[in-house]
Amino acid sequence: MKIDYNAPVVLTYTIVCCIVLLVNQLLGGAITYFVSVGPSMNIFNILDYPRLVTHVIGHANWEHLIGNFTFILLLGPILEEKYSSGSLLKMILFTALVTGLLNILLFGNGLLGASGIVFMMILLSSIVNVKAGHIPLTFILVVILFLGKEITNSLRPDNISQFAHILGGICGGVFGFYKGKVKNQKNISHKKSHLY
Image (cartoon, rainbow, N blue to C red; front, side, top):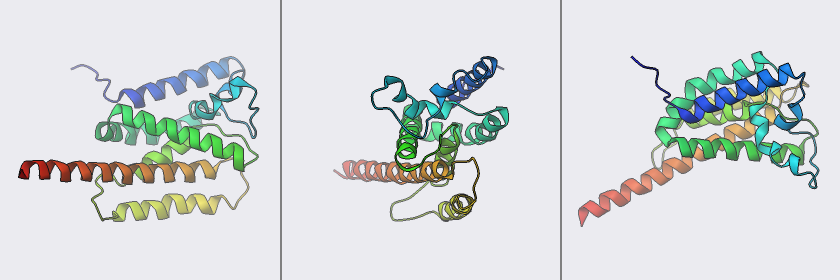
């Protein structure tokens, strides 16, 4: 038996985040600036632009990283197999960019970690088998349980960005319904082509 690198995007993402956290700890937090989004952005500083995406590879500590990657390693391979490595990578990058940009525009706090990606994957996995004209009950329950909890938590002061969780979940829901719609249109086109 050999070990299979079965989900290249998810596994590479996990390894990169572990290396970044280890290096950051060894350097006493010296690279935190590069793997987090601040409360504001200097449009004249070229280093601020990559941070809009790289904030999803930085973590405060091992507990933070393990909490996120427990979900990512559980859900990610299923999603990567379903949607392809390239599609999942685009979803991760888009979610990172949107959460980074909106955090700067709407909030006065920093952003660090893969929590938005976790919630994107949670919502996306709840609608893996969406059919045209249907909303899965699992999707509704996940929205109520996970996003409802985040909305409630946002009313309490803490150092957690519930906004990133909520926005990541919204991205996952949009991706799932969009991918389901594209798949259904391809199936309809395929069936019509067999009729002629």
